[in-house]
Image 1 (cartoon, helix red, strand yellow):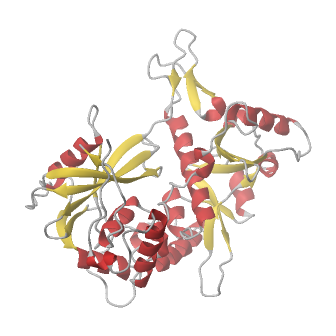
Image 2 (image 1 turned 30 degrees about the horizontal axis):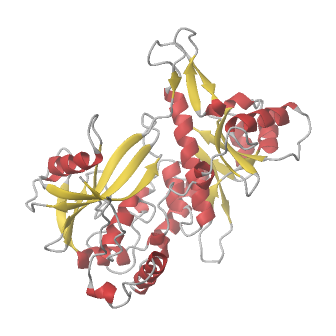
Image 3 (image 1 turned 90 degrees about the vertical axis):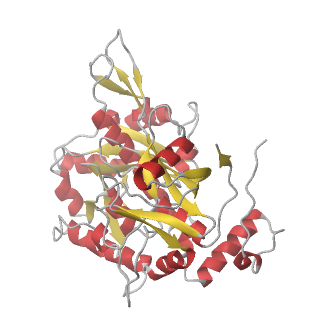
Amino acid sequence: MIKLLPLPSSSTISSIIPTSLHTTTLSRAFSSHKASLGIMSINSHPPAYSDNTPLSRSSKRSDLFSPTAALESLKFQLSVSTQSSSTPRFKVLPFRNGRPLASSSAAHSVDSQQIWHVGWVNLGDLKVLLETSGGQLSGDSLVYAGSCLEDDVVYWAIDVSSEQGLLAELGSKNFCFVELRSLMVASDWSDLQAMGNLAIAGHARALLEWHNISQFCGHCGEKTVTIEAGRRKQCSNESCRKRIYPRVDPVVIMLVIDRENDCILLGRKSSFVPRMWSCLAGFIEPGESLEEAVRRETWEETGIEVGEVVYHSSQPWPVGPSSMPCQLMVGFFAYAKSLDINVDKKELEDAQWYSREAVRKALTAAEYKKAQGTAASKVEQMCKGVEKSQSLTAGFNVESGELASMFVPGPHAIAHRLISSWAFQNVPFGIPCG
């Protein structure tokens, strides 16, 4: 029998939430409570890349929206000279060197920055753009990225890194290619549609990067061919014919909690911007369970022994290096059995225990919306060629007044979700692990 964790007791929670409330009402009450403390409502939304409705509602093979049927329809539309109004509609997201196409729209107020979002292009328009720039659009060069029956749309992705002439054509229409992580920070996090499109873009990037590193069979060395509208690959060697599936690299990310002293353990790497702290994380070893990975990584990096491990949530992370096209961040609460920190300097620069009060201050002090505006401004400058080498991460911590002693990753990251859930007692009902 599965045992559910009870909601942790807290005078703060009990004063505002009756225990008999339905789970949905609990979430609303928590959101209202956090808002009264200055926490952005975005915390209640899924982290970036996690809300991929077109992927989660993937069609059956017999449907018009399935990968195989959609590819046949797409190839037919490309073969005719005039654009067809038949169903479904096709939207394409071009990528260049791993960067998706992006565009901006006018802000809602004069003082606001431009709002950046994924730059979808209709299939017919992309065909014309490529032909104008000296290229040609082939159905086999497109990768299926999902579908939405309600909107009558099938989403596709294409790598146009070799199409040099396309840059000028897209630039004249106010499009530019933006690094996916930068686009994540510069997007409007409160816009669920924009975040949904970002999730599709993350899935598409992971597939395209996987295509780039799986051009040859790892079993016999022969070339691979694309099948199932780009969702799978297969060895071209008739005596091999090995099927190859997209790569996913699982990573555990854990918030280590000291129940007795009401503190959490946060670490920082030398690559972090000043004053930024986050959860511990690490890759899973072959033959290792998720719970074992949580305990091992915590011990190796900080010397802290972990007992109980509780699953919290997960987040795809398709913004890593091309050698690891998509990491899956699996988030846990991990409860400490020891408290003395012994940092492995090869892994971390430092690790410290932080009280609930200090963490709440960090969450309320960091002006994430202002940081989003700054990132959007930098993306615009980069698209104009002003700051091609500028790192957007360096400008993320934008605060007014007195600087807080520390801050944590923004609402787009699962680390923020783990930390804010603990800080404001919004701990979900979870299943204890091992």
